[in-house]
Image 1: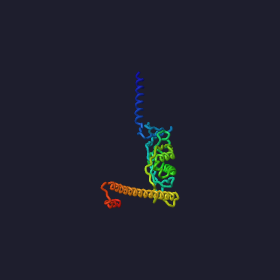
Image 2: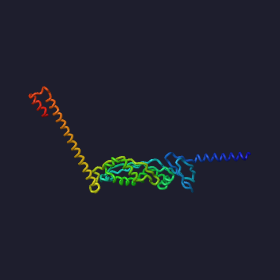
Image 3: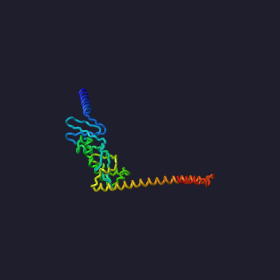
Image 4: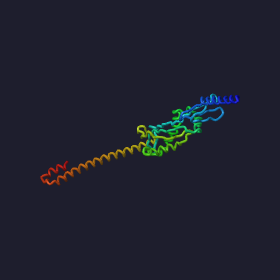
Amino acid sequence: MLPIFIAAGALLALALIAALLAYALYTKVDQGVALIINKTRDAPTVSFTGGVVLPILHRAERLDLSLRTIEVVRRGRDGVICRDNIRADLKIVFFVRVNNTAEDVLTVARTLGCARASDPETIQQLFTGRFSEALKTVAKHYDFEDLFTQRDDVKDRILEQIGRDLNGFVLDDAELDELEQTPLEHLDPNNILDAQGIHKITQITTMANQLTSARRELNELRDERDRLQDILNAARERLADPSFSYASIDELRALLDR
């Protein structure tokens, strides 16, 4: 019986030692981080909670899965040209992250490497060109005024143009943060599109000024109408007064001459 107890004790001790080693070698990762364990022979494994990393035999890397913001700013002569050839200054913010699947995590790790894929500046450089081109393409389908009145539609069309799947990354959303007409002094009159835009802006400005002037004149006419109506009402009241007599004609004339 003694050998059996000794063997059982040895097995229990070995199990305890193995458990302690596993605990000591277990690498835990925070939420929003993926752990990639590169093994000597087997394919890498991905965990979103943690895993056992053996010294020498394994190499562990962490990949940031948190949401990143990518700003695309186009201003001045780099502003986007709308369908009516008016150039627009704008800033749009895109929200990108690594897709939370083992396959996409490995794709990003292979193509970029974990360190570069976790660097905000690298991510900005990686997607700015593609997002900027999509912005230019979509802007050509809208007049400048439509960019203001149809912001949600513009945003959805930009997202559709880019696509949600970005080689392991996912485009979650976008926000049109700033939108203004490009100042005239930043336009190039020798550029045919800018020249057409300048002509359009001049027409719109002229029409707006004419409308403002017409409204001002209309308000002045209404004020004059109201003044004459007050005089007429006062004259009627005076004529209806029982005490009125022809001797009051001079008073009535003075009233009408106001």
